[in-house]
Length: 360
Image 1 (cartoon, one colour):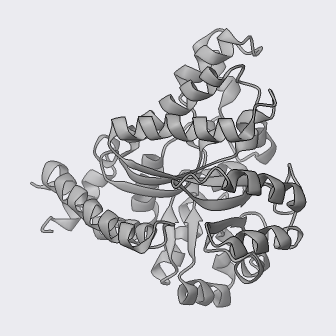
Image 2 (cartoon, helix red, strand yellow):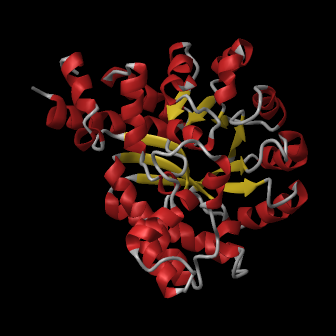
Image 3 (cartoon, rainbow, N blue to C red):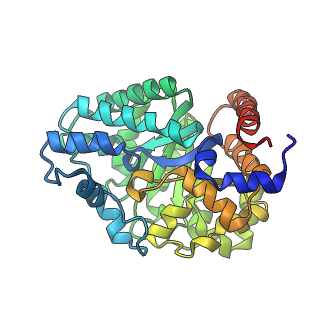
């Protein structure tokens, strides 16, 4: 791939170019990815109690993009009372996934909680899970990228025995596009020690890979515990790994990737010094890391913004970005044969990008 590295790097900080760079994303929550105009229509239709003025509505539902970190303000933007019908769920999922094409998504493992879309109306969890995947599959096919799913279990909403019951119901759906289980929620109030039986159950089942939110706002001991006792194949965030060289070596040895999210960590205050986010140093230390957006709708940002930050803050080159996406494919939850196919299709897409946008 013959391009002038310095010239290519200069072009990569141009958002109109970077948005076309093919991206593999492993950590994005559907509940934080909503298409704003569709959500505005649904909110007005269902009398949610927010402004009828679009500009004001936007400020009500998104974190102030350029403001100081504020974890409580960030959390306050999440709500689950938008929907009044299955059509509402279908529309917001379809339109939100369709918009991902604007971020250059090549492959994504999109995580969502069946509880989020079901709780307010007590919708049937199995029906909603099928509906979410139907809507998202349709949108991804129309947009021309590949999508798979992780089911999120929120430790702040359920104990591990309730999780086991819900998991067993979800498993019986036998949906092949569901390939992983995610543990999210309050790391401090509900530490990983509270979920060993649930993840022993998932591991014994041997159907799904496991990713655990750990080390975002907690010490690296939670990363250790998650990989040793919750059978984590990947770690969500894991920023505290930067303080623990031994856990870094263990992540390298086991090839457990960190799903890192620069903008999200800044806004929540989990790592407020954006320009020195651990992603750059961890990558150069050989730790498997990936670039992710987390909750771009809530954050009033997108994945492309995070890619540009890696170039501006860490000096990442085109070759670095390609390598980071190779890491994401290698540590994805796809079967090995599909990883090989995905890697080939990804490299072909990168070559088209280079030819179209980076050649002098």
